[in-house]
Image (cartoon, rainbow, N blue to C red; front, top):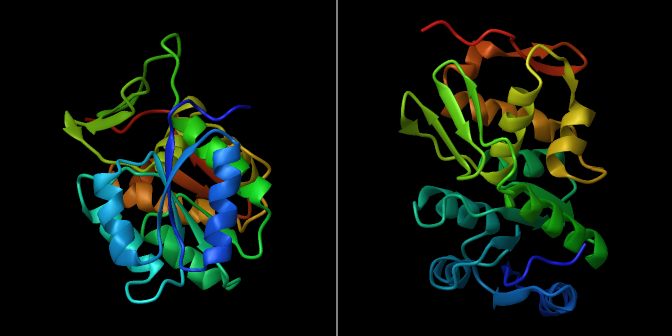
Length: 235
């Protein structure tokens, strides 16, 4: 599938060889790119370049990738930017911390540039909506507008990242059904996912933190996954 026309990717990476390689492959796929080699520069470009997605290295000098991700999520101008984190660390704890801070996805070094571009396409595709898609989903006081990519509770906006939005959408589309972690990974992440299933747990936890009415509504099914209770919470 070709890259969506005009999409810009910000690459924040301090290893020149990796930066040049990622830039080359993305541009080959039709994306525009902006690049930064430090966290400070990356934060600045996230605002001034208005990218559609950020590829962010974890181990940057000075302000590291985790702090950059945290600041991106804390700033209203950049809070909803999709973020893919690059990490040389294979430890699950590092991945979980990145996801907790708001990264939508991660890929460990060394990686295939083709695999990275596939993940970029999959993540951006989650944000592409056609006019004939079912426009709204609801659950009690919660309303999801798929066209506008907005979620509200009692009329109040709830900012969600692309993956949080996709996960919630999948749960809302299948109330009462037990969805395994593998099913959720493949459905929401949009490709054959080879990462840890802890990714799903982290995103479910973040959804419950942002939308308290889901705390009891999303039920953990031991050793399997999650399900959304059939009936919406009582008002």
